[in-house]
Structure formats: C-alpha cells, structure tokens
Image (cartoon, rainbow, N blue to C red; front, side):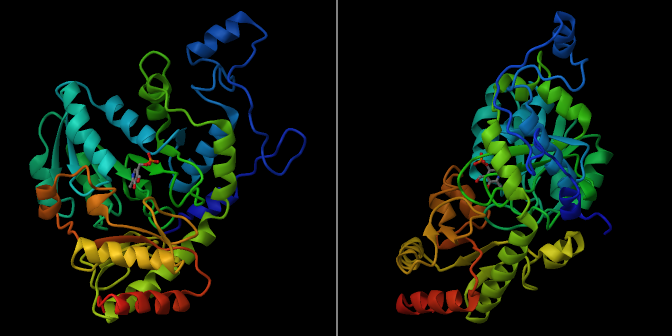
Length: 399
Ligand code: PLP
C-alpha cells in the first residue's frame, strides 16, 4: 500500500506566531472582526479562514484535525471533547426519526448503550449483528438503514471488521460505513479501505498519556461542514468541543505515535505468543490462531504491527480479579479501564467497560467472565515482564 499515514503526519509543519517549532495555542473563545459584514459572512459559513467562536472551530483544533485527517487519508476532520463526543453527533447527524442503523454487536459499551438505550428515544432503531458475517450484515439492512457501524478491532473481543467488503456492501445499499478505529491507529487506515467516516477516541493510543479524553471524526469536507453547521450541525449544537490547550498537547503526542505503536505491537505480539504457548486461551490479531489473522494482515500497514490489545481467558471472574490485583501489586501494570498508556492496563470487560451489555447478550457474543483485556505498555524489557506475569499466574494456579 503506498499510503503512508505516519509520513503524512510528519510532513505537516506548523509554526508558532513567533517562529516557535510548535504552533501557538489559541487562547480565545471568541474572535474580533474588522467589519460587521465579515462577521455575518462567517456565520453563514462564507468567510474562509475567519474564526467566529471556539465551539465552532479554533486554530488549535484545526491543526490537530488536519493532522488526524492526514493520518487517516480523509479530506478533513473535526476534533471533539471525547470519543463519545465524536460518535454521538455523527450518528445523530446521519439519522433522524424512523431511520435504522446496523451495528456490530461487539463494540465499546458506551456506544452500545447509546444505540440500545438512547437513540430509540428519537425513534432510531439499531440491529446488532455479528460483523464478521457479511451475509448477516446485509440481511439486517432495510430501506430505512442509513449506517453500518463497526470498530476495526472490536472492544473487547478483538473481532476484525472486513472494511473493504463492508464498504462494498454500504455502497451497494447507498449507506454510510462508519468505523471506530480507536484500537488500531496507523495499523489500519479504514478510509483507504473504503470507510466513509473514521472515528477515534483520542483518549487512547493517539494521545497515549492517559491525561485527557478526546475524540475525532475524520471524513469528507461536506460531512464536517454539516457537523459544524450553526443551524443544524450536531457537533456544533451538542457542544462537545475540545479545549485548545488539550488539542495542542494531543498534537505534540501524535508526533510520536508511530514509534509508540510499533513498541505496543512488538510487546503485545511477544506476550500473546508466550501466553498461547503456555496453554492460555489468548486472542490477538497477530496470532495465526485468530480467526481473522489473514484478514487483518491483508488490511494492515505492516510496519505498525497488530496493535497493543490482547485478551486472555482465565476461566472465572474471581481468578481474573486475583491475577489483576497481583500483577498490579508487582507493578506490572494497572488495574484500570482505558488503553494506549505507556504502562500496561488490564480490566475484566464483563464487569467494567462492557457492563452496559446485559449478561445474556455478553454470553451470546462470547464475552466470558474470566476474560481479561490487556492494553500492553511500552515496557523496554518485555521478556522480564512476561516472566513476572508468568510467576503471578503460576502462583494462582492459572498456569
Ligand atoms: N470507542 C472505543 C473503541 C473505546 O474503547 C472508547 C472508550 O473506551 C470510546 C470509543 C469512547 O471514547 P471516550 O471515552 O474518549 O469518550
């Protein structure tokens, strides 16, 4: 694939107003106009390059948005105050009363809750399907369907969406393919594979320092203009705007994303191979045993690897909890939700990030009690980490 997402980020130069090597942070919520007419034109969206009010756009947010659009290969992007602040306006912008969404059933618990419990208030219905079964996805599409929604690598089961074929399906039915690429930045470029809209929670790998929440919608100029429209734009009117200080700091962290992703992936692959060889039920897209290993390989930008997320199943929640507490005690990582930090993070999704999904549905989708989701950190000596994790498992009779 000739598309090189990290080069695209690297090639973007922004200078501060005094020649600073980083752009100046815009420290204003509102902007002056020399003429009343320009203010009016800006309101109408007809004054390019003019800023009006920072909920609409700000220089710092535009810099970050541009960099993320370059990374995903879309025309433009809109940064938001959180990942949910990116997902919810897109769904509400594209769907109105009577419309329908086909969604992967294994998605982040918050997105699932929004589709299952919140959008029905607006008479927007969702069918949840096994996204790895294209015929099930197509069978769920109705004349009212506006969106296919999925995650490239699903949270928490690490199922892989076949973006290419899903996009063909979406085009055939004249609907939009919306992909949450939070788990696989740089590794997979969904827009290049045909996705119409690519969303990230910046909270995770992209920012990488677990110090803020943030989100982004990457898509066409027309979509982003719609989202920002002062009269009926969901991003503008729902108001989940990122603060300039945060976007400036995320932009700086984005500059090292390619190096971090390589290390996350290298460490995760090492641990996944060891855990599997030890006989643990291990799920990682980089293992040949993963049902979509070949598919991931066919979609990936090879140099960034298979990502930093893996799961193991230790059989029961109490065992999972004991192991996580012990690993934390040994300073191998933190018992915490979220992902993409320098330190390994682990949690039991069934009782945390996916707890919004009712128990019977968790069972049906294969989300078991003993599942531990790992976001593997940037450890310099992953062999030492493995040996210490193994000791914890042996002492708890997991191995
Ligand atoms: N998408 C995925 C895949 C996630 O894992 C999360 C959060 O865990 C979100 C979206 C929501 O992002 P945020 O917490 O930044 O709103």
